[in-house]
Image (cartoon, rainbow over all chains, first blue to last red):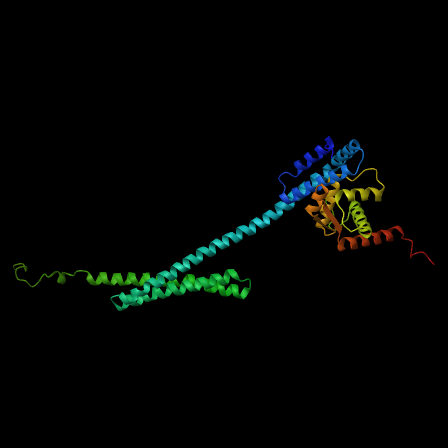
Length: 216
Length: 118
């Protein structure tokens, strides 16, 4: 097969205008032109004339080649933008779900770890507080996990709403109980401090002692 | 100038016409250079269609669903010692589009028929 000047120019041009295009589009166009040139050359008995014809076809097709490149790039960018955005959203969602599951599992574990503390607590109030904290962590974690799963996995509006409720309850239950527990603990602490505050009578000073009583 | 969606250019109509004509005589599939020769014969042109013009039209027609294409079996090309061909064929939508265009053209070229008194 003759590899004349026209053929070389046509090939170089194809390589040039398919640069930085999506691989599929570029390879397809290069393959088509390569096949076309080969068929053209094998279809003629005059190689010189066929080189001229190929050069002519190449030159006449340049505006259409440039328009095709522009169109292909535009389509590719539009597709890439859409795919990129949806991929980014999906990636963020997956990351948030993984983090949510980790937090929920951690809450459940903390709740389970607190169970022996219910028995070990030395007074009734402490037992109640530890039991509440344990139940809040376990229930909150389970609700959060179920809600997250329902919320993320379903497209149905009913399921999504139910998921949202569970998800929010799972988040709010331990948080609100935590606040209640903190408030109760602070109240207990303040009460204990007030109770243990030394008064003049507690100091063991007998105010009726005649030695301490000023002489009249 | 932006093209009207669904508009078929004269070259595309020629491609459809050549493709449908080829389908009735052969296996229905044709490659780029073969089509360029067909178009030259049909339009009695002196030159073959430019590379860019031809393949851009084919690409657009495929996107519009008028044509269908695939690469031929690499073994066939290897056995014959040539590059692989991209084979095209006119789809059902392409054939019906051509029929519609031909019918419209027939009406346009004979407007007096049906209006003239018998």
